[in-house]
Image 1 (cartoon, rainbow, N blue to C red):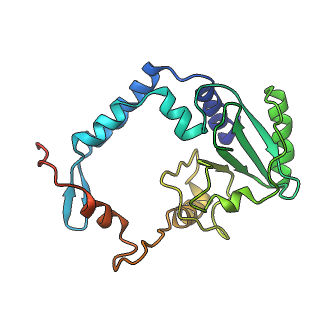
Image 2: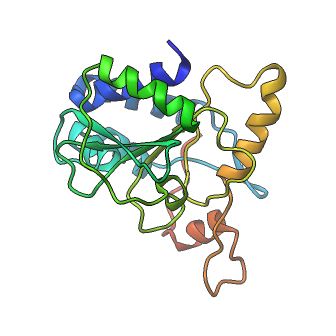
Image 3: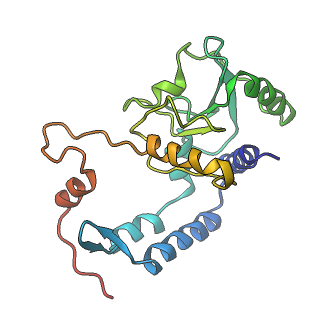
Length: 219
């Protein structure tokens, strides 16, 4: 399977049913990484993760994942739709969705044709006809409910967005692909300025200043 296929199949399994024990194990791994690797720095100041972040991770339930990733109130299958006006995209929405599609695959027209065959082979049903708009481009708008973009070397030149907060590269970054990774990160982590704020692009500073003081973490 290609890297995108492996990621997609894992995503589907989570949608069909995530066990609390699996989520707990993943949360423990994240917490361990945050508390073990303490060399986080903002400007000249070291940053420590307080118990607030840890409690949020520990309190996650499968329903939180269904809601915040799949736009759904519960587990279940998802379905796909093509956009004739934009034949290089596949749009996915959960069958129990409450606020529209959750993901877009942007892989070009030939890629979409191949993926349609794969989706039928995996017994994923085609969904209703969606609004004939460019879902990929619209993901940059704040009102958009799409939570995930998937693709193959499509997020470098000619694409700008301020929405992503997590980027995942699977089996890429060696040889000639190094330049692509740098371009994708540069375009995927652009910062939307805060309105009427002299430090408009310093979002971490703004968020830090808004938080109430916390006790110093034990070292």
